[in-house]
Image (tube, rainbow, N blue to C red):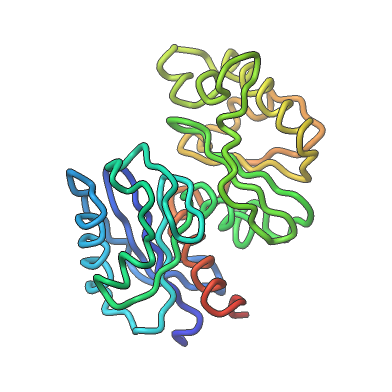
Length: 257
């Protein structure tokens, strides 16, 4: 397999940092996935050291695209603010940080954006034209908007105000679990949320991810929307796959065929 068809993705979370090689032609892992516990405190230097450990484990070529996801808004490789890692990440340029440590360029992306992009390239929204909105239902509600293959980064649709409340405080998967709602009760909250998003954006497709998507048959059929709504396909590989593809596109301007 040619190196031009391979990129490396790193998915940074509050408890673990995972990395794998990705075959850009198929969206499948081209190696085992390695997971290293997130250091505490999760400062930029400590997390960069863990990323370095992953990169050195795979002995990557100098020109291989490397993408890194963050649970935070990222603009031009700079973290705007951070809730799930050490707050000292705020204002850090990830590309500059990794260049100083490794002499390598990287591409940083919000984790929900990476997962959404992967679903459009390789998953549930593959070959769907127009506007695709991918949401991840978990502790909060992550979101990604992709129009004809182009990502609109850093949308925070989980923080839309609905009925005077932050949407994810009323409709996230964590809220369902914490409040003991049945899937039927939760679906009423989801109905209010997705109806509002549908009204604002008139998308061509909704894709629903997050761990709870494995039980999609218990709640998605209860929703009444004009927009088709389907479960995500890539699930826990989506972040690594999406950020690897974004890094390749950022570096070369296109993806291999």
